[in-house]
Image (tube, rainbow, N blue to C red):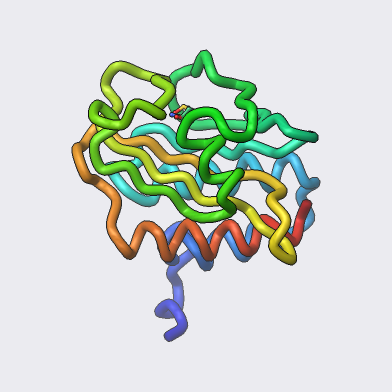
Length: 156
Ligand code: SME
C-alpha cells in the first residue's frame, strides 16, 4: 500500500526509506551511513547498529550508531560477527552472557543479531545490531535486516 498523501519519507517503513535512500544521489559511504541511521531509528530495541565490510579475512567497521566499540576489526571466525561471516548465515544470540563466542562491545548488551551481506553467496560485509534487552530479536527483525542486507549488497 502506498503511504497516504502528504506523508513524507520520514513516515514510511524503514525498508522503503532505505530503498529510497540507496536509489538516491548520495555516494556509497553516505548511503551506508544513512542505511544504519534509518535502521537504528526504526526500533527502540536496536541499541547499537552498525555495518562491517569484509576486506580479505577481516571485517572492518564502516559506521555505527551507538557507543564506540573496541571491535572495529574482527577476523572471520572470531566472535558472533566472525561466525556469521564464516557460516554465511544470520546468527541470533538471545543471551550474549551465555555465549562464550561473544565479543563484548558494551557491558549493557544482552542480545545480538548479525546478518551477512551476501552477493551470489559471497560475503561482502555484515549488519550487526545489539540490544540492551534480553532475547530482543524476532522474525520481523531478521526479515527486515536480511532485506536491507540484500539492498546494501547491490552497492558493494
Ligand atoms: N559482539 C560482536 C562484536 C562487535 S560489537 O558487538 C559492536 C561479536 O561478538 O562479534
